[in-house]
Image 1 (spheres, rainbow, N blue to C red):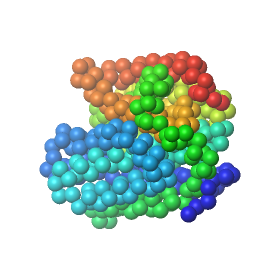
Image 2: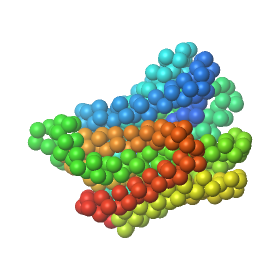
Image 3: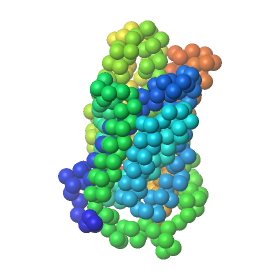
Image 4: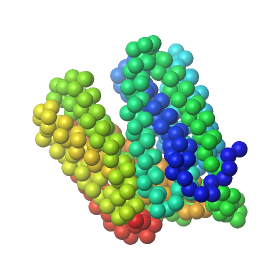
Length: 399
């Protein structure tokens, strides 16, 4: 059994806390682009393939609130390891899936494990890291996920070239098993932290905590809903706009790579700014830049113009790495932290799910260009909303 965490050490913390995220995100990145192809190979239509792909997001929303019970019942370290083992199990099921029903259940299960994994790691880092380093630690966590998500598709492509599409699921399962093993190297939280967060009655109930902090959810929570929505739109709209201009798949991949490359390079800068100057100095510019980028996409009618807009979107998303987790950790109470964060993640994950639906709805009513401008406006309005409530929420003014 590992020794409790008494003194903070960056090298030890980076290896044990970020290792599982890095490994699991490589596996996640390897299979995420392949779910739709697997569904097509099993006889699904394009529409059904898209629906099955979206079941991961549905699973995350469904799992957000129950995740707090798992984290509280088993502790964050064991919860992370269990989530990795659950993920490995269902990735193995996907590897052997011979029907759409089995694949759909497995994809939904990926979302459930993602909820537990995400909540438990955020809760653990919030207690393990000194407050003065919180934003940098959580931004780095977001950056680790981005880097793994960038490496994953490259690894998946090579595996498919050497073997077949299904082999990527086996690779992802192995990554999850490695992540579970590395998780067990996490130092235990001190007993005084564990007893403090449990409270005198063994810990509050989920809905008691959610009710007590309903004002935070309806103010800052709405802001993180907007962040999740805009980020999800960014991921979907770039390839759609490239396709509308007649760009081929390789050109589209290059555009997306430019955006992701800039995105990955800025995560620590955003965390440093939040820790040094306050959360608003990242939340506001991130959302404004994303809004400008989305609105500008309607004016991008050449490949180079799209590359420039993609770079702007990468800049806006990159400096905002970790902002959702940081604001949530700032606002979370010592007693009932896991329960609070489950509600917090529900808001952001719902935004992630609603974003592509909003893009589809506005595009159907008008056009893709109108949709980018409209959702760019939502981003700017969300920036103003966040700036207003961050200033009025003492915990979120940290810096």
